[in-house]
Length: 249
Image 1 (cartoon, rainbow, N blue to C red):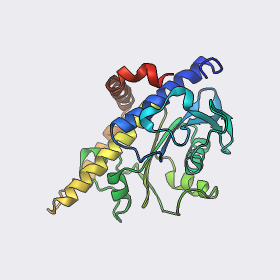
Image 2 (tube, helix red, strand yellow):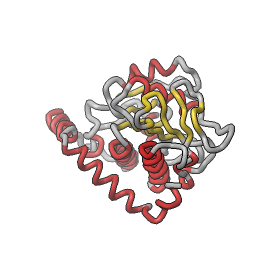
Image 3 (cartoon, rainbow, N blue to C red):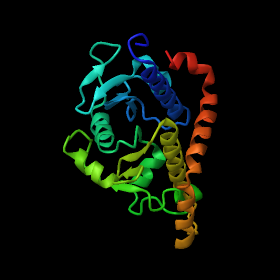
């Protein structure tokens, strides 16, 4: 695979493989389900996704599958490589409608599903949650995402946001690159975990004022956040540095 793709695509493959492994490192996996995608540099109609059935902990650059927005396999190391149909439906919708989101992450964590099942959704009770105050979308559950027609509704509900809670399902986050998408899903996941634990405490919750909520959300939208995302991504990569030769193969 490395010999038949360009340098930019190979680097993208290495980054996405590393992202899969970091999602596993932070225990945001669901057996072989859920999916992470990355647009192929210079190929706006193609994106990379995992070969269905490969554990995230074992993801490699060469085993990622290149598909188009219609779900057709464009390039794969293994003949007949399959991808998750629901993954194609969800991710193709976002990639086609949002050229600003090169990387899209979808998870089914216990905390994410718990918040997705609560009527109130994500509450503004932690600093992590306030990152998404006024910047979080919601999409109603329609069953397993196998219907192509759902793509229009996913895009409509996401709007201009970079993060969305899929009701009764899980979490979705995107970013201009792998680093930004990773930061989005990490903060959203941590906010959900904190809310579950806070509610389990059985005590009244302290909610910041509307003014403080909006102010904090604006602070998170500062341009410096992109630099922080890059620093956080490099720090996270250090945690799996001993695996680089394997995931970048």
